[in-house]
Image (cartoon, rainbow, N blue to C red):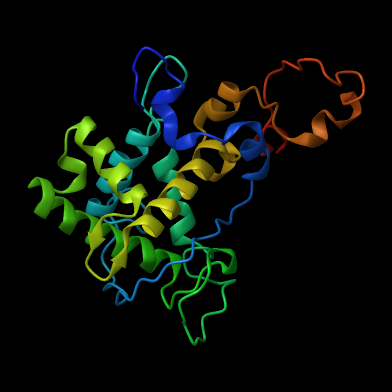
Length: 238
């Protein structure tokens, strides 16, 4: 995002991802960010056709968001074309989305960032409520839901959320942005078996070779040297 003449800055929201993120985000879980939100858990809605849990409105929101964070260019296809929305849908439909490994008995006091997730909402409920709040703000500020904004308007909206200056109704915009960014990065760099990183596009972009087990015996041979091979995923060994 930013200067179209330089493709890396156009992905400014992914700064710091690199190979370290690619190596560490191959699990199914995503750690949600601390939030001071007091939103009520949203009512259960019917999943859109072809999704496990996302409604049509949520699917449209996530597609617009991940394509803004990861635009199609000479480096990779767009975030949605790389399967990031599929990854998010599967995550929120599973144990992570239901908060299976989260302590959720309260009390839910305002926490510090290093204390992790502090909400009564499950991650599925958190993203649902965040999307509703963000679309309401977008309609007030720009006259349209987030996914209906022009690309530059969507970019500006995400930057406003990131800045922490946006007042969402009973919701912390900055914390929602951080959680959105994190799950987008996971979908872009996780093993393709989980639905994202289609055709290993994220791995190819950063030169990540895939499963460490397939090259650990070559570490000494290639120490301080470029190791360029076809990336290997879990599916390649199943």
